[in-house]
Length: 162
Image: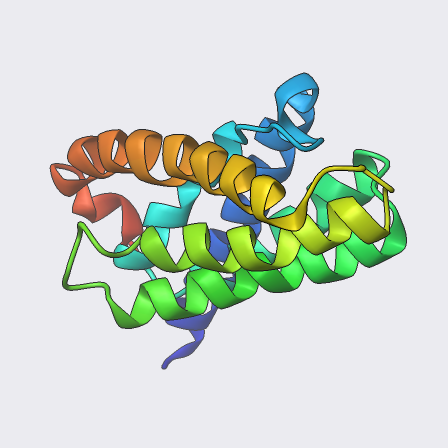
């Protein structure tokens, strides 16, 4: 990777991070709690287009949670859930319809424990898993596929300019 490609990678990761954090904060009323649909989760489709999306989504989630007032364990483990989903989603980059699935699964398996034990939300873990999975499906999958449909026609957005 030459210098220009490295700079492009860093800039793309920073842009994705900023966009994820901004969307999380703008839509804060529906981005946090047991029943949530994070609009920013639509960006979980981006690992299909660029490897810079993996660190970008992780840092964006970290910033969004931190600036959104989340508790420290939520900031850490919520961001790790996003990192896992983005990394595995990148491995599936050639299978558009599967890319958002790892984010749905990782969040549905990790976030309920945060809600239950960090925020003391007194609902059964399985119900919290279901709530998170539904919200993730709407954000990551439904909105993500709509975003992918648009971006497939604009793949040049992810290439360094010469």
